[in-house]
Length: 196
Image (cartoon, rainbow, N blue to C red; front, side):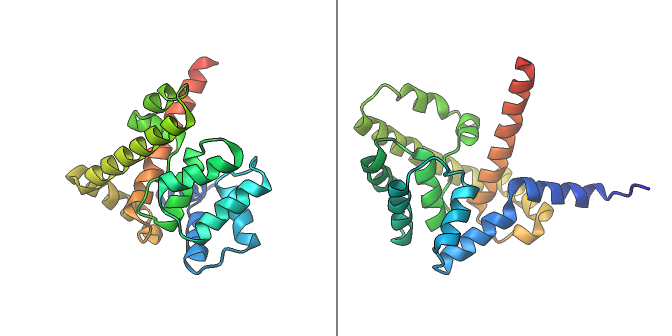
C-alpha cells in the first residue's frame, strides 16, 4: 500500500532537486578553509565546471583561496587564461566567498530580463563586454536588495524558511537565487515542451 505525506515528500524532493545539502557542505568547507582536491572536485561537479582546462581551474581556485570578491577582477583574471568571459563561473566564485552575492545564471538572468542586454553585448570588444557584465551584475545586486527589503520579498523568504526550516541559515540572497532559478527552469521546460 502506498503511503505519502505530500508536504514532507514534496519538500524532500525539492531539497534533493535544489541540491541544498551539497551547497551547504561546499560553503561550510570553504568557510573552514578546506579548499583541497576533494573540495575542488565537488565544486566543479556541483557548478558544472567540466570543460575548463587545468590552468584555468588553478587560477579559479587561487582566486577563491585569496578570497577575491571583485567581480571585474575575477572576470579579467580568468579572461587572461582562456580569452573567454566567464560571467557565470565568476559570479559563483564571488557568491562562494560572499554568500550575500547573487549568481549569474541563464535562468535567473532571463527571469530578471537581463539576458537581452548581455546578448546585445556579444559583438562588442572583450573589454567593453566585461564593463557591461559588471554593470549588469551591479544592477542585479540592486534588484535583489530592493526585492528582499520589500514586503513581498520578506514574505517570500518567510515562506522559504517555513518550507525549508533546516536551511533557514543560508543567505536570503541564495534563497532568492534558488527561487528565481527554479522559476526560470520551469519556464524553460514549458518552452521546450511547446517546441515538440
